[in-house]
Amino acid sequence: MTEENIRIVNIQQWIKVIFISCILAQIFFIVCDYIFNYEDIFDDKSFRRIWNIARENSLPTWFASMQAQALGITVFLIAIVQSRYISWFKLSIWVLIGMFFLWIGIDDMAEIHEKLGGFLERAVTKDDTEWSGPIGLLLKNPSYSWHTFIAPFFALCGLLIAVFLWTAFWKLNLTRYLVLGFGCWIIAQGIDFTEGLDGIDDFYLSIKEMLNIEYEYGVSHTFKVVEEELEMLGTTLLWVGFLHYFANVADGLKIQLKSSS
Image (cartoon, rainbow, N blue to C red):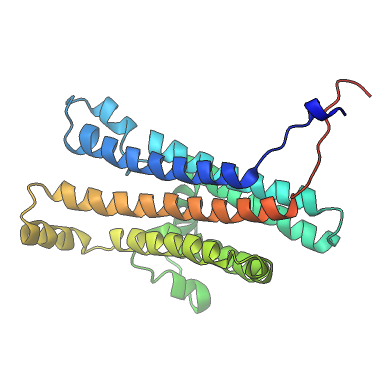
């Protein structure tokens, strides 16, 4: 390979570009949501839904989904780069982590956790069976059904990922990305949990009257926007953290492209 054919990629520079681009995109979606959805300047439901952060089938949701899947692919790349010098067990865990984030991206776009949570709740309660033990405790959940069956699994996966990566990220001073990223996700899910409570409409109404907001929708929609934006921000922070880790393990990596063997 000749000197002029060598291309050096500064990963740290690209990480800065990715981080700034993601943050600007999230700000852009907030502005568009306010202009086209809340203000509804075109008075058209179909166009409004394109920018509605609170709806699953929208551009903001597409962005959030792609971001999570890019995070999953980054984890796969880390696994590939490390495959030569880590054990098969650790490699398998890295692959599972990548699959988890990839699934989060797919789930976010397809609303799988909401649909699956509703299905499981109907399946468990269809015979009016009085459940005891862990299932009975979970069924006392006063919010959305997915918090009963799916959220505990996601929480366990997040905890196990953080525990597995803590030492490796600590050595590279990257643990703040795990804490802030998962922290944003936890707060977002806390907001989502409150949105499913029976008395939430009264709470929205009290906020509306206290702040003299014209429509109750302005309150409920704002809470949803904050929730979704926190999820996107959390994914961005996690992605940046994993990109920094990838930059470290791939430092000096040489890739040679050939048209034939």
